[in-house]
Amino acid sequence: MRFRTTKKSKKTGNIIKPSAWNNARDDKLRSASLWKESFIQRRCLVPATSFCEAKGRNPAVYHWFVMRGDDERPPFAFAGMWTLSKYMTKDGPEETETYTFITTTPNEIVKPIHPDRMPVILDPDSYDQWMDGGTDDVVELLKPYPTDQMQIVRQGEGERSDVI
Image 1 (cartoon, one colour):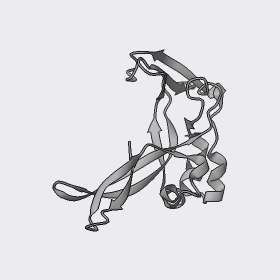
Image 2 (spheres, helix red, strand yellow; image 1 turned 45 degrees about the horizontal axis):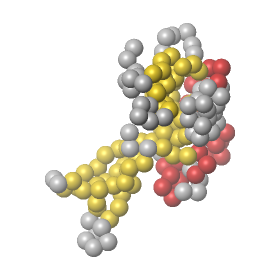
Image 3 (cartoon, one colour; image 1 turned 180 degrees about the vertical axis):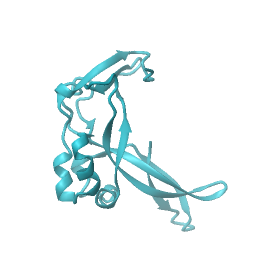
């Protein structure tokens, strides 16, 4: 997952390899030029059944989070944004659609593992609002997901992949 930004060479004016960004902070969406246009015009839902946060290094301990529900792994969606990225490859110019998650302050279950940020998880009842609402309408959705609606299902040093 990468959010690419197009840059041009100062010498030639040609499109060069884009910079990659992994996450967009909720507090920067309206002010940072990198995110502003996509936040206004190109919001998306990023479907998932789990997500992972690592704590520490060498070795890192991986923690897998899922939503509580009737199913073992109920599907959910992250708040996301997308853009069309143009960049140069050895074969010439290319285009691809890229996306990024939006992050917010962590809730109580994520905070001990990642004290700064967590992905914005949308309640299914707010999907239409996220996709079709104005920016003033969707800002209220940029908040930590309720702790009691989440659980850690796996954790450990070798747990880099989420295999059901």
